[in-house]
Every structure is written in structure tokens, then in C-alpha cells.
Length: 429
Ligand code: UGA
Image (cartoon, rainbow, N blue to C red; front, side, top):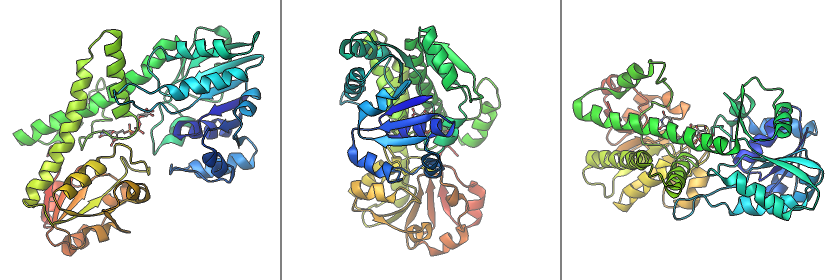
């Protein structure tokens, strides 16, 4: 099928490249012309495992191209994907101005029958608005259907998730659009769940809010474990073995970050409030998340006693492993809080240092984890990159001014750290 991707950001790019890999012909467009130029030159603006190689493959196979001309992309397409950004406004509601303006522009280029797919994460009832906008601005006599087809990919595993999703949700009332979407996803093993548009939009927000709730729940239990002297890893394993609960997303740590959970939980709470339901559970999910981070900072401060002039090494900058994304990354809050109290910070991350340098230039960004630890009064683990698990801990222990590790991701068994001679504090253990 011929597909247009409007908005070549994280979701748009992964969606376009993966549909191209499944054999569809994709034309992607973006209002950011520099981005389009660099994509035309084969350069990817983000780090995502497997994406660059797959892009090269589908470019070579002529399955994907990039254009500055939205009209060109839309005119050639059977299905148009709206993948534009929906950033939070000051009041926490999603800013839908890009969705609105992209819908207006798409409308102008509609001809014959097309399916317009909402991929961006949007509050419930946005599809209705998109439909009305298309109706208003499209030429007379054209026909189209709006479909909500939310994206569930995780950063760091995006290609894998887009090619092999757990489920495909398609929200539409139109049988004709359903048929088009069946054809689009014919090469996928996942079950397709057909719903109405509003329910599909709600599934996305509810899924992310539920996962965030799971994380906050386990983080709250971790706090109680610390107070009671229990071990959250054992507790999480014990509850996760119940099939109704499930073991994933029960890792206690320093709270969720990234571009999705913080924004989506907030937006879901706001839209619920606007519709007349005060979803207080979500406010508490957010509060626990904030507390978890602050509590972790207090733990570091407590260990250092006087923070001023202490050398603190930080391992991990990205909000999670296998990405260079630092949006809502705990690193930013932690490094800033410690620097405000006079600590000297050096940080190491395999991928995200360049992004962080722009926001926190006074941090010293070092080239290896060992350089972060050397001579430090304290080493803080913020992101669970795999390479941190394989570190030579004895070497680190010897190189530090004082061998203290504060671990926000519970990477190591406490007994082992003790045997190695570390003062070791982790979360909920
Ligand atoms: C999340 C969802 O998992 C995706 O399904 C969804 O498509 C995406 O948001 C989105 O809306 O676009 P993502 O933000 O990439 O994906 O990353 P996750 O793996 O979900 O992690 C989110 C945060 O939760 C990270 O800060 C991570 O460290 C934290 N987390 C996750 C925990 O603290 N504990 C856990 O057990 C799991």
C-alpha cells in the first residue's frame, strides 16, 4: 500500500521505516526541513537500536522516501498517518495545535478516498475534531475515514515493538476503513482489536497510565520495605508470579521518566477532570513518582552529609537504557539538585551525554564509567545500561576517594557490594 507519514519524529520515523520494511511504500514528511534534509542524506536524528540499519535497507529497496512537500506525500497515499507532536501545555493538557494544522494541510490535498490515521497520542475525542477539520478544509466531493491506531512502542525497543506488537488497536466506525487497516496489517502476527475511535484513544492513555501506576505502586511498596527492613526485589518477584499481576513493570527505582508517562498521565488526569471525573488515583501516581526521586536525592545527601565540594560520579543520563533521550530524565533533577548544593558532578552515559551537555553544561561529561568513579566521594547509578552490570567493581572500589555507591536501579546484590568493600545503598532493600 502507499502510505504517507506526516511528522517524522520518534513515532513517525519508526512507524514509517517499519511499514516500509513490511513491504509498503512510504513517503514521510515533516515541517522541520533540516530534519528532512538529514533523513534524505540517510542520517537519523535519534539513537534507537536497529533503526539506522533498517532505514538504510528500506532506502536501498526504494520503499521509503522523505519530502518537504506534504502535498506530494498525501496525494500518493492510500493511508495518511498523523504522527505530529502533542507536547504538554503549561496546564498539563496536550497541545493539539500541530494535530490541527497538519489536519488542515492534509485536507487540502485529499482526493478520492483515503484513510487518515491518528498515531500521535491524543486525548479522547480528538479524532472527532480531526474528522471535522478535514471535512471543513477538504475539496468538495472527496471521501475519507478517520481511524485511531495508537502506538505502543517503547524507546530502546521501538523497532522490535513496531514490527512485532502485542496487539494492534484500530478505532473506527467504518467498515471500509477497517478493510484498509486489515490489509495494512496483513503481514503482522498480532491480533487486531477493532473499537470505536474514542475507545481506541482511551486505550492508549489508559495503558500508559496503568503502567505508570504499576511503577508507582511498586515504588511505594519499596518505601515501606525500606522502613520495615524487607526487600522489594523479593516482594516484587512474589507478587509478580501471580498471573493476574504479572512480573513486568515491577522494578522499583527512581520513578518513571521519558516523553510518555509523565506527559500522558498528566494529560489523562486533565481530560478526565474536564469531562467531569476527578481521577485522583493518577494524582497520587504522580506524587509517588516525584517523592521517589526526591527521596533518592535525600539518600545521596544523607550519605555525603556535607554536599558542598564533594565529587559525585553519575552513571547514566538517558531516562532509560538503549536511548539517548533525556526528556524527563531523573539524571537532570538529581544532577541539578546536587550542583545547587555545591557538588562537583561528572557523568557518563554511552549515548546521552551530548544531549545533556546542552542543558547542563556545568557537568563534566566523561568518556568511561571508570572516569566517573575515579577519586569520587560517591558514585550514583541512575540508568540501568547493560554495560554497568558488567563493570569491574573491584577496580571501581579501589579508584574511589570513598567507595560509596548509591544505586537507583538495584543493579547489584547488596551482599556482593558489601563483600567488595562498598558502602552500598539501593532502593527498597
Ligand atoms: C512507554 C510505554 O511502555 C509504551 O508502550 C508506549 O508506547 C510509550 O510509553 C509511548 O507512549 O510512546 P517508554 O516511555 O519508551 O514507553 O519507556 P518504558 O520502557 O515504558 O519506561 C518508562 C519509564 O518507566 C522509564 O523511566 C523507566 O525507567 C521506568 N520504569 C519502567 C520503571 O521505573 N520501572 C519499571 O519496572 C519499568
